[in-house]
Image (cartoon, rainbow, N blue to C red):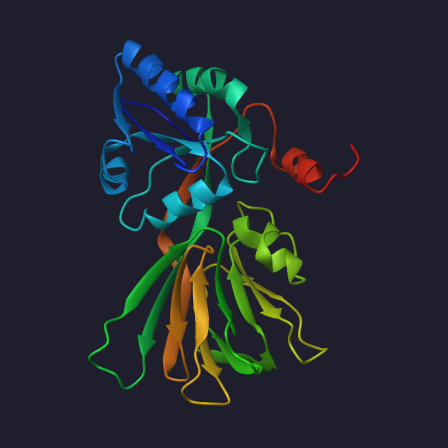
Length: 284
């Protein structure tokens, strides 16, 4: 955990598709300006500038907005106060009516920042020196699936340079503990406490009853290769459900923990298990 101090410049990021967040954004900008803080509003400046110059970012939207922001933090990480303008999310624990009370705690140094693992994925094509390496970053997961393929594909997974698994199925999910409650969970993966230093490898509809999700150290490297029945067929790699790229039999996918982490400002009113119970409708 870390404590925020020395805040002079505050970034504001909203989901442009959520009109309910717009009046909150305007009120927040005025509230911050009256307190002598410089405001960087993503409706007026680029997200790149928001990330490079802000001391803290207030994100108004839902978990999807947070995932988008995390993908932009390849070179610098900024503490994020995640405010949900709709229903409570796993990442957006703070409700809009709690925003200013939480900010007052942040500015007085009474808030904690939890560091979450980010995934770094690179995709390159074996034997194609002309094709540049593509890089992705994800807070939840990197997914390889057979979208568009009519048949199952074969997936080979190496962990730390050692052959770990080979199976036929719909694909594979590599998730962070933060992403363990997302797609990985629906595919049969475990729930992993979000601050742990682990990666989760979850097969998607694997045709091998003995194959189960793997939880490995966050310091391990993962390499994924696929084999399609037809060399011309392509599968899809997706980072946090937002960025995707076609892959084929020649593609090499390397996944590691990013050098950066995602810094999430914790709610003072509810913890992880409170959110977990609310999302899954579990009794108190």
